[in-house]
Length: 386
Ligand code: SF4
View 1 (spheres, helix red, strand yellow):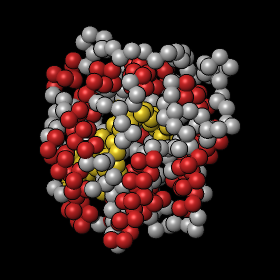
View 2: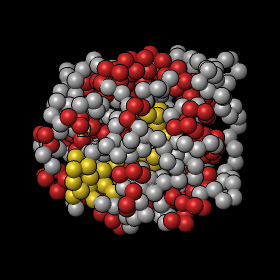
View 3: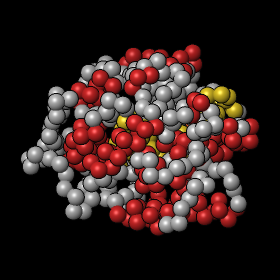
């Protein structure tokens, strides 16, 4: 299967319950940002810029859990900032897991080895590691050398300890899709369980606008991506991928991926902030949803991000006959921790990945390393500000 059975079953039960209850606006994935502090300054990240004045604030575990309970989404994506520098990330995760939720812990991977002992492997928890290319490219994107290598060591340690791991790749204008195929081929040799891909979109807070794409450019990129990446266990929904390739339209359903952070519930969406609401109910009831989305708000013009449109495939109004069957067969046809059947990886035959001109190579696949502490001093600067 493409994702654990528990996730498929939970989601099916949740959707059936919401359908029977006649709910019109309900969440699928809650984006929980316990803090905005981060050890990196990635070029495409709006968080560290938008929340500069409150970068040292964080939510308590109790505030997080109250929001998780009020929201009710079956999946909680813990992001930020860097969630692995949140001091109580272990307790927060185990409390959310005790509520029978699934967690995607979105991390840059730098502190996986240091914090691994705070977690227990379960089919409800994924380390979702941000990787935007091979070593050279990724380190440029995150503006620091050595990040790719440490993230890879973290992935190896997590897999050796029995955890589920996915990768999360943002596609920019300059992204070389062939390099992403090489990245996935390499991650497959490490046993990575799935890959998320999503187009970047310009935050108001990000000054480097030229890295973002128009809708036409996104469609072109994802047509190429589908051809090259379909052999890997892509966990981005097939209907959302059709939308990204320009084969169908979807309307923004930003309430499907609501964001909660130290300022409150961020409205209307993960990207844009017109208001912060004290409660999830407030976000749903006070946001003028009909004013947002492509063709309604100029700021939404080129947006195709997952936080606005991936949930639309399930809870939006543009459903097509056969979508449910498509989602079902897609879920069943995947394979965690490896290639899809009959679709060989693009490797050089030795288990190592090809390299193209845009990369200076990366760590070679090898036996998973034992869990070890990161280098002395790593992350100290971040822990000091918390
Ligand atoms: S289209 Fe939706 S997700 Fe995208 S910026 Fe507009 S409101 Fe946010």
